[in-house]
Structures are given as structure tokens and as C-alpha cells.
Length: 392
Image 1 (cartoon, rainbow, N blue to C red):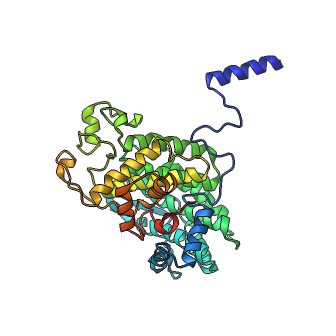
Image 2 (cartoon, rainbow, N blue to C red):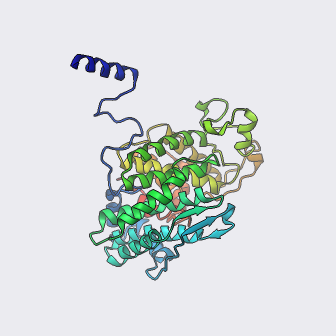
Image 3 (cartoon, rainbow, N blue to C red):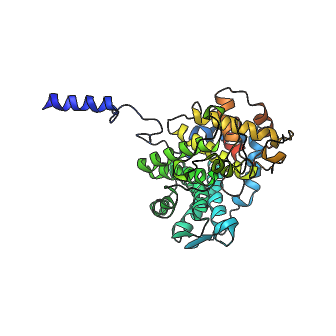
């Protein structure tokens, strides 16, 4: 029986049905999750804290910007509701802005706690998380998946910092985890067939929530969707004549693909599926890609040296040069672009340029020009502080 079992195991390994226990499959969840481990690590935070305390720039200016924002206000009153209803372009907007901004505030306060060691900020972050976990039950209307992705990207960043760096009491952390598991994760984990920034933001939230919950199954599912969507969101010439697609979308003709890419029929490296829509939504997608890649790196699987990193590098460079004012050729989006990339370049630029040593002239210029980068009031916040020229 032993020989039979061994032969069966070897046969399964050869067939690819099994891997040796010590081997980690690409994108698989870590055996042990690293905490804090959603977009920022303890070593990154320690670097930022040291720089701020030394008055070094640009970190001190970024910190001052954060502390002067409405999100760091210790008098902030949370506005939770049982049902958050969000229609297209936030019409209707029943709790949508309140939820997103309370989540950003919870993360802001958690960062403020870490830098200052002032317990009031940790307690404020906890108060915001507790207020929502006690009340919210669902997200409804057409923008529910996107809203859940945006708010769900900020909540676990706050929770990771409080749970794993604050030595005080968070009595309702279990209730908060239940909120993420039952209200947020089911709304986002199966993805979306909408524009790419939707599913990328949803997968950012799903990955972050999975880390906090230490949910390996959800982590693996979200990472697989992320890889497929990233390849379909940013074009590389190596993809062939047409961009890659998400199989479930049935984009099986050139005409369908061109329509999905906002009418753009000339495909060049670095173009994204929403470049010709506007740079703001494109920035959402780029930001989510960088956030997931950063979380994955902290969890032990560095995607920056893979296809994901190359697509991110090219998208940053392509969008940055036009955001900086380069003339738009007639073949690109009919010769007209709607700019407004947003504060979304720090994380990817730091990983690719500072850690890997890749020259990124346009991205570097735009990143440094926009410092301190601030918040987009949706799901991006304070990345000059946490990621700016951070070697960790």
C-alpha cells in the first residue's frame, strides 16, 4: 500500500495536480500572513516615522498635509447607516461619501497614531470602525460593487495598523472582522464585468480584507482575478494585435474590443482600457494595481518583477508623459485626452524605480511634481508619506 500511495503521489505531481508542501504556487496566499500587511508594512511605517520626526522632506510636508486634513480631525462624527445606497455617479448618494470618507479617516487616524504615538488617534480610528461595524448591513443600487470596493480598500488598512501596532484595547475587533466577512467580501469577491477600474478596486479590497481575515481561499481567488484583469487593462505590444480580454466578457470580435477600449483602435504599449475615457478613472485602475502588488510583496510574493510590474511601469510612463503636457497625437483618443491622473503614482514608482532601479523619467517627474500627493477622497491617501522614496 505504501508503494501504491507513493506511485500515485508521483503521478499526481507529474500531472501537475499536486505540489510539494514546501512549494508556494504563484499568487498563492502565504502560509502565514504578515501583519500589518495591507499596502504598508511595519518597516515602511518605521522609515516614514523616522523621517517625519527628523523633519526630513518630503515626508514632513506629507505628514503635515495629512494632519491638517479633515480626515485627521479628532472631532469627526461618524455617519454609519444600515444600507448604503449608491447609484451611478453617486446618484443617489445615501451614505456613499460618508462611508468612504469615514474609512479614509480611520486609516488616517491609524497612521497618525503610528507616527505620533498619541493614543487619541488610535482610539478615534477604533471609534470610526466600531460605529460602522455596529450598523451597516448592505450596499445597494448600481454602484454597490464599486462603493464596496472603495470603502473596503481603506477599512482593512486601518484595521491592520490598529490590531497589529496599537497596544491598547479594541474590544469590537471581532465584530469589525464579521462586517468585512459578511457585508463587504460577498459583494466584491466574484468580480465585475464592468470597466476595469471597477474590478481592480474590488480586488484591492478583497485582497486587503483577505489579509486581515487571514482568509487564504479568498486571497487566492482575488489574486487570480487581479492577474487576469491587469493583463486585460494595460496593453503591451507582446499581447499581439489586440488587447487581452477577460473571458467572461465575451469580447470576441475586434469591434467589441475597440468599443470596450473607448473607441481606440490603435493599441500601443502602456495604453489602458480607460485612457480614452479619462485619466481619472485610469488612475483608479493603476492605483489599485499598485496597491495589490504592494500587498502581495509584503505577503512574500513580489509581482513587480513579473508581467504585472511591466504593465504597471508602462501604464505609469504612458499616462505620465501626457499628464505632464506632451502633445497628443491624432491617433490617440481622437487627439484629445481628459487629464487628471490623481495622486496615484507614488507606490508603483517607488517599487519599480527605487527598489528595482528602473529608469522612469516621466513618472519620476510627475511624482515629484505632485508631492505631497494627498488623497483622492475615494480610496487613495497619503502615499508620499508611506511610500515616497521608501526603501523598505
